[in-house]
Length: 67
Image: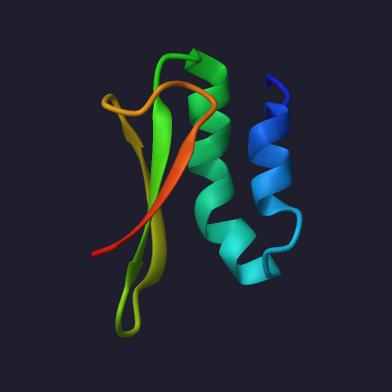
């Protein structure tokens, strides 16, 4: 498995364990293919944070958004 790029590691550095568990698999997927960045959304309610690959975001970049 590829190591996460520094930008992803820095993004996760001050996040809670629950947040990291929710988004890290997608960051790992992004690091594996090195094609797309990641959009992290916050959904009000029980679903909380979610992440997905986004082909409009360059690899190594994370964009936070509200769904």
